[in-house]
Length: 140
Image (cartoon, rainbow, N blue to C red; front, side):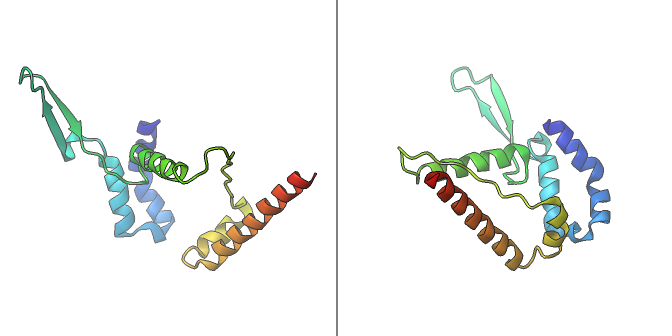
């Protein structure tokens, strides 16, 4: 899976930037380059030697630590989940809700991605819906 993902990036990044010029920025290029280089010892590694025999060694390639990377982002996500779990009450059931923007509105959201108004309204409406749904479930 990760290799397929990296192949898609390496083969399609330039074409994608041509199709969506707003992503042709040094920041995005740096992120994609980091992901493509992640875990490749050519770009940096640590070597560990056995303290008993002094002969056996292991090379561990450095990671990119990008949230965008499948491997590193997963670690970041797990750390985030653990930090949230530490703040929750033990005997309370929690549910994770994901609000997805319907396909017919994604272009509008994309074009307005640098202003917070549209996203704020979307989150506010989502919260009102979830709250109303839970209230109806508890009442019925």
